[in-house]
Image 1 (cartoon, rainbow, N blue to C red):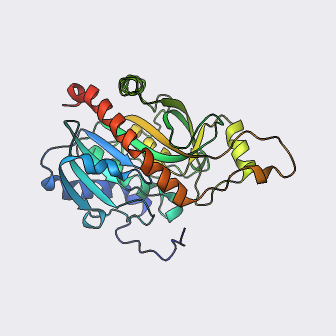
Image 2 (image 1 turned 30 degrees about the vertical axis):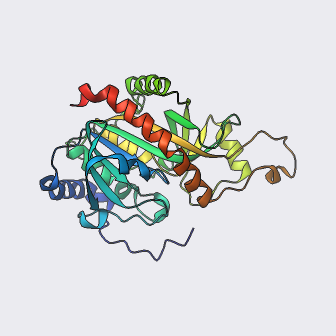
Length: 304
């Protein structure tokens, strides 16, 4: 990946102004809405193809939205797509932001806050992740039932700083961050579509380096099933605002296959690449879009 330190940071906001920035962006977008979105969708690396299936789509470049950061990573188109998917009013973020791009946690979650202010009550978040379970195969889909946010635990939580009580409580519980009813809908929809859907725990690291073999074993030892560089900040912000959350990882590579513990153990761990992540995610994108459409069809009455 190219060095991102020289990329422009137009439209970025200070962490302490994150709430007011979200309100300003929502106010700017509101006149451009044909209808309020009921479901917000975050499309991860290589998974932006789903946006092409949104009916009556209206595309707004992030550069046109006040305060929005700019996507700097390959595989993230950098636009908001408004319309209907499976008959449900949606707003899809075709490209997300990451801590490793130099953005603060407050900037990373600004788009989710904006969509919540515009009316979204459910967040569906997707990502590309490395598999820590040796039974995974590239292209598998994993429903997230819980997470371990290592940057969060180290103080990079998007809620650090002044709290806006109109957005949410100072100390939100993350016990049920991933809505059980939505997960049940996902499993039923996957069965109807004959899509294999695993379930597990997602570990977030900051990136942008891929993990060492020792780090991968550590993450699996702490209970992780997949590892990636996103998602957790957005989930925290959504739960803070009272949104229901569903999250799905596309397993783009098996980051830690089973291997004997030996002095040269690093040699048995395949070396990942961003190109591999994008290619695998794009290949699995059709199944992911089919699954999300089936989930929304089940939810259509609830979110109308």
